[in-house]
Amino acid sequence: MQLSNRVLNRTLLARQHLLERSTLTVPELCDHLVGLQAQDVPPPFIGCWSRITDFDPKPLSAGLEDRSLVRITLMRGTIHLVTPTDALRIAPHIQPELEKVPFRKGFNYGAMVGLDPEQVRARGEEVLGEEPMSAAALRERAAELYPDRDPGAVLQTWLYQLPVLQTPPRGRWKDNSRPVWSRVQPWLGAPLDPNYPLEELLLRYLRAFGPATTMDMQTWSKLTGIKAAVTRLGDRVRTYTDERGRTLYDAADAELADPDIPAPVRLLGWYDNAILSHQDRTRIVPDGSAPPLRAFANQVSPILVDGYLCGVYKVFTDRETARLRISPSGEWSPATRAEVAAEAAALLGFLEPDLRPSVEFVAPGADLRP
Image (cartoon, rainbow, N blue to C red; front, side, top):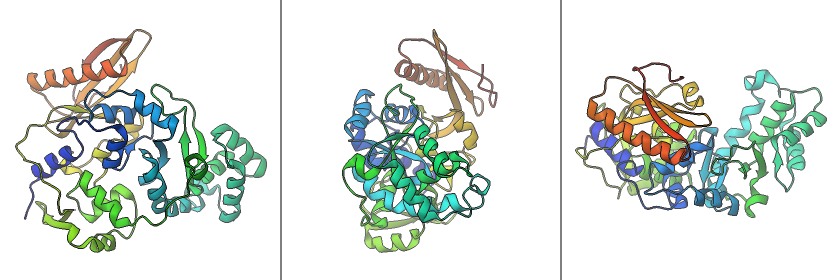
């Protein structure tokens, strides 16, 4: 059975809870989506706001405090907000690839080349110990132990080598404190679980992002062995083809969405996984390529119109005003502009309730900076 791009679009939106906001709790949403992108502090809150009815940020912050939610480096080497169970069982899949990064010649201009990786790891475990430490404290110890190396590179190496997570206060609502790091086992009181099958992880990916190709799965996870794992799923998956004849896999009991269902305007956080988790992004990005990551790094965020990335926005604040500036990717009808403006105003009310809101449109492709 061949699936149209429109079916893939509406199915992705439905599984991402972007067609209708859901009543899931934050841990339930994280479990379904296999984590929320949390490289910076605001995106998981925006991601939840765009997906959960009447989202209240307080339970998310409380979850970080009571350790029912954690911020940990996982898929694509980026920080995700996940449940403790997922932190313990997904990290063993990700960790081997992360540990290879620091000793490559391209890492910080070869800053760690020539050192024994196992010795560096052992020293990192000794330094970090059982209690959380700030990045500044870790960097200071790195300078003491490796006076002839860049302490920042040593710190980064430890954060790649050791299964670590970011602890509060960073990550709480409106709290952009500098990172404090802990090894996973002391913080969660449990060891990593190396027995979680890759095929189970990929089946969950399909339930949140499918139908998808094996290359889509690889793009999302940056893991190897994808084809063999999908084969092991057997009749738990079914196959389709896309408009280009490529094989798409999906959970056998998962439903496809009606391609004619309307898709409301949605404003996502930067780096949102709905945009970045397929090799072929044409199901949500009209030309197949999202804005460059350097744009997202500047907190430029996607706007979905009729289910597709059709513009970007960025929020600017001062003491009195919150300005949400919008750049469409093309010309919008008056009705579309009004719908985008209404959703933007609602987002400003969530993000900055104490400031005067201002929703501003600039020309397609124009610089968002005031």
